[in-house]
Amino acid sequence: MKPRFVLSLLLLALTAPAAGEVIHQERSLYRDITVEQNGQRRCLIFNVHRGDRNQTCIDLDEPERLVFSYTRMSFAGLLLAPEPESILVAGLGGGSIPMTFSDLFPDAQIDVIEIDPAVVSVAKDFFLFEETANMRVYVNDARVFIKRAGLEGRKYDYIVLDAFTGDYIPEHLLTREFLEEVKQILNPDGVLVANTFSTSRLYDHESVTYQRVWNEFYNFRLPTSGNRIIITRIGALPPRGDLTGAARRLADQVEKYGIPLLEYPARMSTRVDWDMSRRMLTDQYSPGNLLRD
Image (cartoon, rainbow, N blue to C red; front, side, top):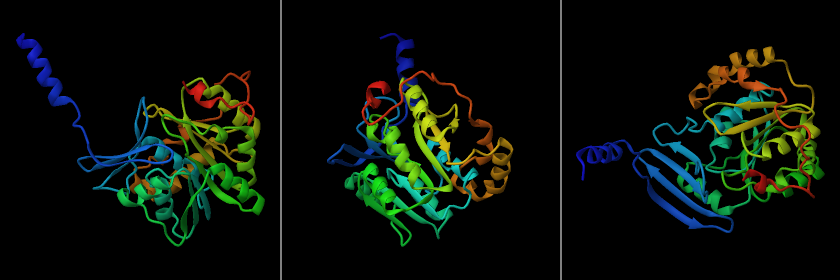
């Protein structure tokens, strides 16, 4: 074997990231679930076949700091609704988003929807998630929960849609009809924050659908993330100057979570960068996973 080839192999071995230790595995009704630990970083992994596999990660040395860009980006909605008293999070994962809300707003009522009871157990056993008197997890389909909440007249100040994984999109949570149901449970001065994808053929269809239901939204993307965050509300969106002022007021409050709120207003745009001729997603037409491919 040539010396240069041997040296290349040694350098590759030294620079390659160490494989994490699998500390839990199970097959739930919906997916394969793995918990992997690498040093002090612990990650929840669903059965994903491409790209980023990690659903949630925490640093056990600094559990309050949010590891992923998209998780931190989910708090950009505070620029529109800085003091939410009622919060709904669809999709638990490891629980980072609802736990951060609970720490920020201990008096707020927080409802979390998670379809998979195994995910709830894993979040509690491995990711420090705990329900509190003001934060409760409902094991249910988000569409069913939100439809029922609308019929009961419940309203929320801050709604986070984070029920997607890197490998699968619940197509019934993408449609015009679903977004109209979400709109019914949002307070007039509340905010909707949806975590989704920044690239794929789905982008145009999804953007058209949100635009038809909400008229206008902030498209929030960072170069460090493959996700985009859609941020909107029932009334007119505030001007950029208002967002900047809100970021200055809130920056210290969210600093310990690693949320660079001062950087966010410049990245939030209402510019239409999608094909307006694309078909809107409806309950009769929602091939989300085919478009994702």
